[in-house]
Image (cartoon, rainbow, N blue to C red):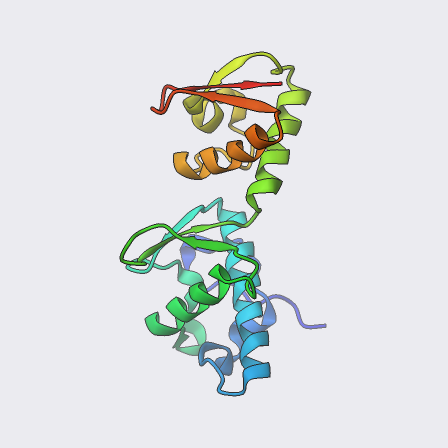
Length: 187
């Protein structure tokens, strides 16, 4: 079995790229539908793994992450193909793992965990830390010392609210107010 490809830039020194990241045809979307579907699935897995590793929740097409470029083999995924990948990931075929959040379709949320998975992670943290019945602010859930080791730390506020909505619909939380200072009570 081949070992992972070394990273392509100093900024991701420790991210373990899979072997196909160094395969030149990987950077050209293939015309055969079966091959293309597999290729998009591999790119999707790579983007989700990379985003999880770097705790990235949002991506702009104007500044895509370095994973779309491999300087060692002089290959990169074109901006048009990055958009095509994101369209795939936003579809049911791509398991809705990204969501376009700007009207001009230039920015996406990256759901390396689904909203339901994030909601469950938050609920588990609430249970483990004795926060049931306590009102916490959105800020506390996103940025406080209490959550600094949690994977959702720094998550976009609107994205976090989407995850909290899952708990609200299940009757496990209630959100008060609309601003950053709004509170969440967990049941």
